[in-house]
Length: 313
Image 1 (cartoon, rainbow, N blue to C red):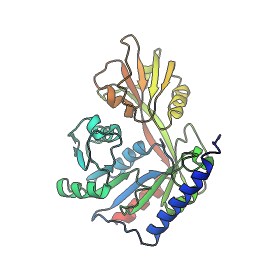
Image 2: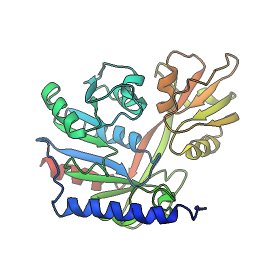
Image 3: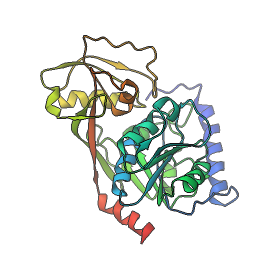
């Protein structure tokens, strides 16, 4: 990995700040706030995509016999403060007000509720007053230490093993912070396999194609067709590799910055487009835009189930 020497001194300063902040929380100088129902955090070490949203959906389905409420920031949304995005599947706002990830979760999890808030403790209090959840899933919560959690799950990418801390690299915390995690999951093992002792492996198994109304089509829909592919993820390369591995015929691949709003992107009526579910929410009702959908298979899932059981048993 090429790193600018200009930023390395700043990375050492950043490391010191991260160390001090974590130490203050570990020693109890900085206090965590606790909600009266269990909180399960899903996070990662680095800036950008590691499959957190997909894992949150997977986890919510494991917990679907309880009323699940997902707490997340709602990155790049056009609203502020704590807002209810969905109430047990009833979607109350659009993706621009909720943020693309929150809106996707609301659309794909009809049994759950979704709340966005910069301060997740404040969001949790809103949910407790309005929704009566039985368990919270804290999305992108590893660094949000202000909120106490009963279970800390961290997703690890292959690139994290050799990366540098911000701003020289993309790591928000060093690998040593994994000691704070209860469960570490290796992401994208279907396209970027690697080994790391004591971890679980996350595999994506592609099952169908979604149209822009989120109706499911069989994977055979892709056969004999040529697509313009695009994505705006933290890691667009893994999506490109996936299309290649599945044998999807791609005329050209367009890569955008994470959470791009596509206001400057004009679709051609003569083309077919393939993207990700998170990007698809911004093209609802467009008949020539589709997304690959998948299920998650977790190698070592029983260990996760046992950890969840300990929270409620």
